[in-house]
Amino acid sequence: MNKILPAMLMITFLFCSNAFAITIVDTGAPSPLNQRSNLHQTQWLAAQFNLNQPYILTDIEGYFYASISGGTVKIIIYGDNETDLPDTTNELYIAEFSFSESDYGQTNWYGISGLNLYLDAGTYWVSFENWDSATLVAAMPRYAPLPIINEARAYDSGGSMTWTGFDELDMGLRIQATTVTESTIDAILEFFDESVADETLTGDGPGSSANGRLNALRNMLEMAGELISIGDIDGACGQLSAALGKCDGVSPLPDFVDGPAASDLHDMILELMNELGCE
Image (cartoon, rainbow, N blue to C red):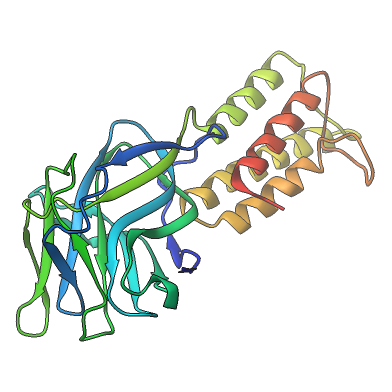
């Protein structure tokens, strides 16, 4: 099965995750012999899911019968429009996967893995769509053992797709994620400010340059947080890498800060970079 990397990622807040994925949605697999709902250019299928806390999604899979070798399915995460339908004006993530030749005629779990999709607590929709093929791409067996409560389908209503409730679909859906805890940038900035206040972190430089360097390092951290909030992870990693180099105590000098808290600040920044996958 071909997997394509995410084309768009929206991050609401930055959190520190644990290292182990857990299953947060699992309907179980419907029987392959059950009635199926078709997926093609003029019919898309979606299911609502709720998060009671922030998570980092890592895997999204639907239970499909693959009816075309090489057919592609788009997976889209939407917000909720508060009428138990997808809010298609609030598209948070999109990617696609393809069925291989060996998948043809098979019924199994198919989807995408290796995501790093941060979602805050709230209500969302996962939609399986096909935009290109007028022929049948896949079908989803119905009547999963632990069905989703709210489901929907979109159908062609004269050139545009219209969403309507379809709670009897009972698709097979699995979502894995890692749990998340505190806002890491906030924690780093709070530690920075407290350390400056108790003088365990001071600017390092001659004369008035010491205070300027201290402020410059804090500005780097603030900018990293702003870049993360708009999904610019590469930019954030660049800012964090620059900040790391100003509190590591090694060449090339100079460092911007000194004091007993400098090494702890370094470790917190490094941990954040590891969480983000910075190289």
